[in-house]
Length: 457
Image (cartoon, rainbow, N blue to C red; front, side):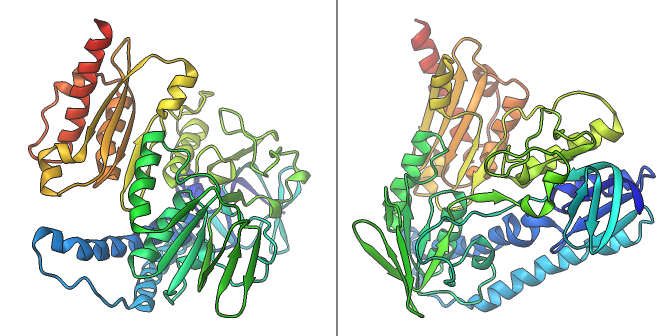
């Protein structure tokens, strides 16, 4: 049996602990059952954003006449060529990983599925290997609900939605989370008639003001039916028929985007004593240690956050505390930022207002609409805003929620302010380029300052 200093299962966020550890002279085994690079590179954030960029261009064409550009908004999309270009780009990036591993004598790559056969013994491709340290970073997969008639039909999940070479004429999207709205927007902006069927509301975890504004704007572009639960699906060979209590919806394609589940079942974790919760997510402490000594877990399979940047952060934490500067310090997430790449776009960091209320935190709000800024006027903005939440006592920035153009970029300056303990006064002392969109951040801080003093008086 081969014995390693470390085994890494999964080559998404797990890559943070492969080459850097091997460079320290440690023998590392890497196990991957699919393409190298994990979900983000092969079937997640990277290909989806490459495709959504094209949808943004299409929407710009549709809106060009608002800006006195006499453009025919009708266009033709070579959908199969688009998918082919994106997949070739992704494949090239993925294929570049193995040669780097092959050149390193301290790295052994196993293409196959990992199964634990003992506490720290793994079987892959019929071979058993062990290690002093094992890191699990197997990610997650689409969670498909149990709906009568759904199983066996050619419905799509995020995997097939990103690789299908045919743009359907119509599509029903089940779900209202970020995967549903991003992929539904991608299809809809390119000419597919998309209808969203949502159990509760769109983007429920977002700040309530953001969710409401997004729903209002998004519903003007696409049919959105909230508060419905599909109870039966039929497929007649050409069309899907999705039945609810009140109505039947029909479309050529069906995208199921109702959530994700951890990729942990094939691991046989019961052989290790590693505990999982009722959904299968691996339970870890504040040092990412599992219940089995010598085994850590990170990324989507843990379920703390479902972003590649959070998985990267966890991987960097483990490399630092296990190898670079060994310590027993717990991981501190601070405020984990995120973005939703649709139209309108969303960028957010920190708790929602309702969470501050629930926690009993005294706060002040600063809010300004996109249209109330010089660049907002240039963009002829009809929606969107910047919302900032500050601690009422110290004036420290607690959270930022943005919906509108460039939201995913603008939120980064607010991530920095929060990380450095920035206050209303710090933000007001900052010089902002005129007439760039970040002036909205300053204006929201001004609004908060006004409210701060009003509350103080």
